[in-house]
Every structure is written in C-alpha cells, then in structure tokens.
Length: 420
Figure 1: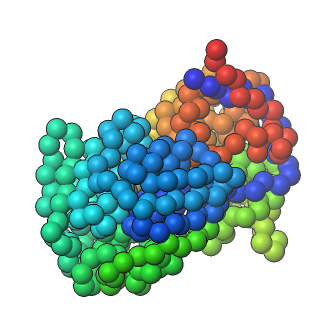
Figure 2 (figure 1 turned 45 degrees about the vertical axis):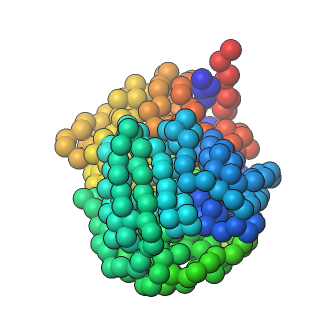
C-alpha cells in the first residue's frame, strides 16, 4: 500500500483547480443505465471509485470509454445482475439499483458492506422502491427487487440522521421511468442530488423541486442520451481551504463553488481564515491568529460531515477550546487517536470531540482509517514540524484526484512512497 511522506511547516501558496465531484459523478454514471442511447459526462474525476464504477457498468453490459475526464457510456443492452466481487469494493455502487429497477423492472445487487465511519443502512432505499411497487427479497447476501410495473407514489425518506442522499438519488432514478407522479418528502437537498436531477432532466425526465425537501417526479416512458458536466467537488474545495488556513498560506481556488460551502466558509471566517471572491475564483488565507470555534455537522446546507475531520486538524492549531459535534455518523472520530500521535489534545465525549488547541504539532507515522480522515492527517502533517508518514492512502485515492500533485504545485513537500 502506498503512503504519503510529508515534511511539514511550509505555508501553501499558489493556485489549485478543483476536480469534478465524486459524490455527484457516481450516481450520474449509474443513471446512464436508464437509456439505451449514448451519454457523455464531462469532468468526471479519475479516482479509484469512478474506475470501479466503470467496471460495474461494463459488467452490466454497457460499453464505456473514460479518458481525460470525459466518460462515454452506451448501455444499449444490459443485465439486471451486478457481480458481488465488484459491488463489494465500493459502497456507493448501491446507486445502480434504481436505474436497473427503473429500466428493467428488476435488479439483483449485493448488499453493501459495513463502513468504519458508522452504520449506513439502505432501508430507506428499499422503502422507496417498495412504495413504487417493487417487491424486495434479501437472500444469500443479495437484494432482489422486481416489479411488474412501477407506479408513482408519495413517500417519506427522512432517517435518524436526516435525509438519505444516495437513497434520494436511487428512488429518483427509478421513479423517472415509473407511471404517474412520485413525491419524495424529506428529500436530500445536497448539490449532488441537484446535479443528478439536472442530468436526468437533460435525458428527458420530468423532475421538479430539487434542492428543496420536496421533489416531484413525473414519470416518462423513455429516456434518451444526453451530455452533462459534473459540478466541482465541494469537499475537495473545502479541504484545500482548510489546508490554506492550517499552513498559514494563501491559495487561489479555481473552479470551486462558494454557494455550495456557505456553512464551511462561515466557520472558517469565525476561526480566522478569510475567503474572498475574485471573479470566478476564491482566495483563501489566514487573516490573523486562529481562533477556537464550535462546529456541529448537519445535513445540507449545514456543516458537512465530510469536512469534520479536516476542520479538526485546523482547530487543533487554534489556541483555546473548540467543540465538534458529529450528528450524521456515530463513529466518525477514528482520526482522533492518529491526530494525537502528532501532538493534538482531543477528548471524545459522546458525539462530541473536545479540542484543546494551540499546541504545536510534530511529525509522526500515522494510519488513515477512511477517506476524510486521510485528508485530515495530510493537513495536520503539512502544518506539523518534521516528517509525517500517512499510511493507507488508498482511502484518499478514492476521493481526491492527484492530491499530492496538486499540493506540490502549492509548495508542499509531499511525496508518494510506493511499497515494493
């Protein structure tokens, strides 16, 4: 497994261009299964997750070409059975179920595995499919969904931690080819859901209300091919914003969307990191001494759980006591013990992390537990004195396109170390 070797203490300076959103690209890639005509999707990030999705689409019978960020999919004739060996490698692959059910009226998909950041049940996905008329059977580790026909219905997709993003996407894709009108209440409002709906509408779907808690889908008989460009990755954008503040640098971010990150920008400003608009770009710099802040993760448009770990690395440098409360995933503090190896003083009390910041960080070998924890450890390593080795960066390669290359262009002393 590869690792990153970081020699910290260097402020980041320069320009960085944000890649397309992984969390938008994956369901959009799945949505190409809804039509037998070619689709072209641009600004697809080249990540291990998107490459796995390419393999899944091909295993279902689609012809796929992926180069230079442009994906062309022609799913002329497909099957409704997804191979376990592919699906098990990526939890997000559950989003193929809605398109298969919508187009073929049947889908057989492996149950997704567990996740180290906490339980991520798919019961709301299945609840939505059943509301549309599908019969669900779980047997031998597979979900079998069949329907003689899909009929529009009103359904509620709110869960214990708020709306389900992938569940909303999955049901929306199935409902696009159902008879009649489907109304999803407590729908996810994330920009990635809006991006998927825009792609589906370009394919001929009739979807209204996206970006609000109530989405209305009027089913159509057939969808056609379409072209689309994926939105920029708001989590990558936020990660580089935090890195600028943590290293006391100044970064010009190109291609990001400030309107997708209002909660993050608000907390960064409160912590002493300024974000200024300059045309289509954002200039991020520390505007003084870092200050402690309190953060609570919430569904969109609240502070995203996917930026919680990175923000913790920043607040470990802010003199005073900060509190981060995690309201989305119950086990998303796996990075705390590794940050402690770098010198951070953090205690866990229930759903909250108490950060006693201001102590200097010093380099050490650390182990990444998940995608966003990896980014947090990289940020901490960039700010720490001495050398930090971040192991298991295959997690990071799932969601950040050439992160080490982008950081080196900003002046970071970071190298990918390949294990022989």
